[in-house]
Length: 113
Image: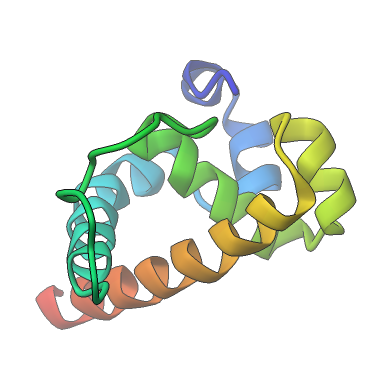
């Protein structure tokens, strides 16, 4: 996914995520902190958070875009798998995890405002 295109195309950014690019950028650090906290709470962890194989969504921007795109358009997991070059099951797992992180991040953003 080429997230850098979002900054150059405000209409596409709004259509794909529901946010403008500035809102998207402002949400990244809060989303990252929320995702880290959720991952840290996993019981029986074998590695530190961030350890292990690198995924197909390597950057926080791509993870945030993935979940916002999913929530805005509600594609099937087959469609998500095609566009992200991942397995359907991994897309489903990502949606569950990233939606929890987004919900937590938006709660933090609202309380900070």
